[in-house]
Amino acid sequence: MRRSTGSQRLKRAGWVAFFLLPSAIPLFVFTLVPMVSSLWVSLHKWNLISPMEWVGFRNYTNLLGDEMTRRVFLHTLIYVVGYLPIVYAGGLLLALALNQKLKGRSFLRATYFLPVVTSWVVVALVWKWLLNPTNGLVNQILGGLGLPQPGWWTDPHWALPAVILSSAWKDLGFVMVILLAGLQSIPTDVHEAAKVDGSNAWQRFWRITLPLLSPSTFFVVVISLINGFQVFDQVYVMTAGGPAGSSQVVVGQIYDLTFRYGRAGEASALSWILFAVILIITVFQIRGQRRWVHYA
Image (cartoon, rainbow, N blue to C red; front, side, top):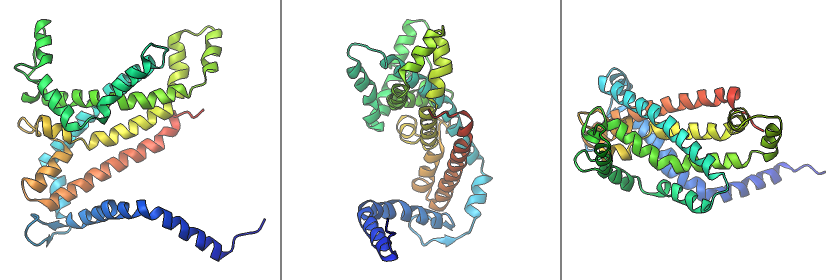
């Protein structure tokens, strides 16, 4: 077999680069350049109008010592901790149910996936109406059952749970599709062999389904955590970070610092702090997945 010469390899690399250009150019212009620009802005004091003033790492030190920064990170963490179990458990239950032979199964799958492709603004507005403390459908049902009627997005204690509820509802379909694909990749003969050996449904689920579903679970957890730390749209539409800042999250604070307070330098610095947090968590997840993710 003839080895390719240096000129042939260079020519092949040139063709590869040529065919990658349509996707590489937008990636460079709309992703890499803004990232580098935001890093440069984070080292300056800038109100989007006046010339930038070099301050070095002062924006970072100010943010790390700021009480509001700690609060928005705490709210974001609470959101992630509340959102992730609900969306995973709900998506898993839907996937298990729709993996059975049911009439209208394709229609049900499409119906549950529909919120995923719906605009976040639309979903947030619908849930803001459903959770209206005065005449919302949810409180009407709770009142009819004789249960307490929370203030939801008007109550500092319930604003963040309201956002979590709407977010989990919208993303259930996405988790369902990923886990359903994982369920369908599990060989049926493994379950049949375990059934012949006398294992019950719970034992098969716990000992076979969940371990073999771990790659899909890992993907869902990583993506959901990344998306969770970047939550913004539903918070902005439903609560705008209120009442009294009780539901303000990191990306919402970045938006406010930039467009409400004219502190673009600090906003860029906060975005890079968020990036570092997400990167560290993702690296730990990737390193830790060797212990619990089982590939068939």
